Length: 461
Ligand code: PMP
Image (cartoon, rainbow, N blue to C red; front, side, top):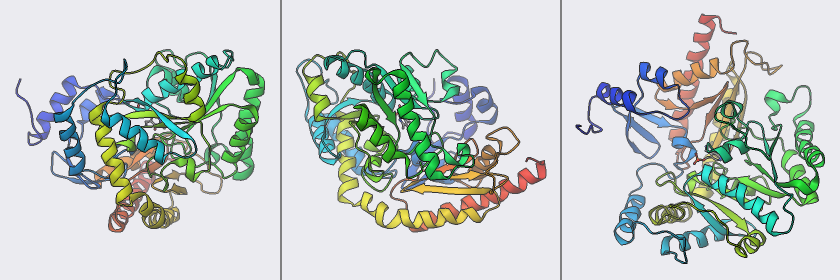
């Protein structure tokens, strides 16, 4: 077989991709007929495809390239580590320098007494760890009945059987025997879509109180933990009403239930602080991390747990772990990535400069006829598309039709913006500049205009 390169003709690359490569969350037959866009290079916030288009990546890959593309220091850290010690495990009474340093650095950055790290290779794996970890914790505490984990509809925690079960994506549950037993879903704090006539504040309280109802129904002594993203990402960048998290915190405290904050998207500066839990004032017992931990340069995730949980788990043998838990190359790259985020003041700049600028520009899109609301915290935001801003009505067309058309227009205008149903979402690299923010907003507005014209012409309501 001849090996194709980034300079091979697009048609050849697409044909080989279609013949052999199965893409995640994709109808591969449709993709094969359209041809995948082949991304060949990237620098800063910009991607280049095999046809030479320069595309502004307003999604930071999959919400992960926090320091932007093309950071040579990260490549160098990987090369150095590969030469020194490309692999060793951390099972059986061994450790290595990158893992111990990274764990200590994470303990330094994480809030409260979250001082202990169990490594995984992804967010999904880390949440699988959490599932077993919290159940084992209660077992070791002499409360083996506490096994149920409460999570939320339309939450996303990964794609493995465990993490996909924790998630509340019905389309995923319909395939492959999920959810596994012992997981109970409550409704999400999605005021725009589900708030009806309630004020956001009342709705936020009501949705948080569903947790208390579930605990009482299941039995306080049977519930192990509640898991949630501080701000739902894959569900559509759903920023909860301000009343939501304080009430959730009150409830988990009252019933002594462990709180797992899934920080896979919100972590590492995305919300303008190191962790979303700090922005939303939550006190988790466990945080799930991945993505921005290495800015996506290496696959790595983990669970950061409290002193109390570590004390209990450390007293027993936790029969769990992955070949690549704490992979030395991934840890070395993550450590260097955290140094960059820290020493270059990237998180602070997001909070004090670029995120406020982006917020102002992003919210100005609400004057567009298609846009009902613009929600944004730090560098994650969403636009609700609607035919009626007053009633917040959905389109009569199948959910996602208008979102998809808008995303296609963005694509055509060399802007990567994703749609979740009829919400358009962004999560750009944290290093995005003011000029690039202007470009992002200009291209988004142009794409919205074109989508609007297209749906009017097609009579989509
Ligand atoms: N949790 C959250 C909040 C996520 O957004 C994701 C990925 N989008 C995951 C977990 C799963 O992470 P991974 O894809 O690395 O397994």
